[in-house]
Amino acid sequence: MADTVEIYVKYAGSSQELAHRVAEALDLRGYFYNGSGFVLPVDALPLIGADGWAHLNVDLTDLGRDGDPGVSEGTAYEPYEFEIGVEFRGPRERLGRAIFDRLTRLELPMAYGDDSHVFADYLPRRGVREFSPGTSAEEGGRPLWREPALSAARSPAPAWRVGSGAVTVCETDGLLQFVPVFGTRWLSPVASARTSVGAACVGLVLAAALDTRDRPERDERDEVLARLAAAVRLPTDEFLRRTVSFDVRVVGDEVVGTAHAARRDGAPGAIEELTGRASVAAGPKPLGALVLDLVAALRARVPA
Image (cartoon, rainbow, N blue to C red; front, top):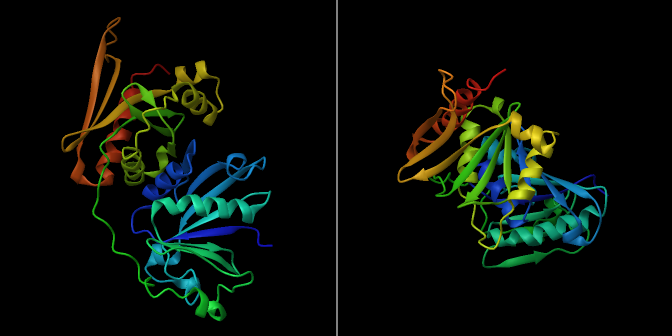
């Protein structure tokens, strides 16, 4: 058996957007961007009834990264821009299939298999196509898995967009965590990344978090707060003491960040409002700069 199974996805957007959409479709608690790809922890119990946690690794394929299929050329995975690797010490193939089936709700072309064999694929409107055991993902299986509707060329990138929601941004010891907010309610998934990934990447993570869909029946504030603290391995009270946070929301054609902090002159009880703004149309780097600048401004007001 292969060490991992993979779900390949044809998607023209950013890896940040896809990771967030996958996390929402699977109802995950959160995910982490490591600077090159995304790691999504998955509890196997509700999906297949098996104890244990799996990790999904969302990465670009050669096609998604370079515009050329590279090592996937001539295989069943040639047309896809993204690969989601499933790592699990339990029944990996069964968990991968449950995840694949759940992700069909994204209505994106997908294929499921391992390095040697393709198990199934999905095309919107056509549905899932099953392959018999042992169907090669290489040239020998082409008569079975060939899909004329899919091009091996990279899909055209969609226009830049930002969701219309709001998030609370928390920064602790260089870790940013983006909490989707609806009114006073906090929801999952929480996206996280180090400040060191740079403004453009931070902006892409923020844009994806701002596009979280509301689930009006949910308020996960207490659970989310506990997970925010656990992510940096701190008790909740210590997390609150060491964290700076602020709100970011879309207002008209601007993304606006607002924080409240002690004034620089140290006047007792005096609170100053800090605000950052960026045009929605400006792209990811100015959005990320807004976040990083507000973190720096708040940190400058926190006693050492």
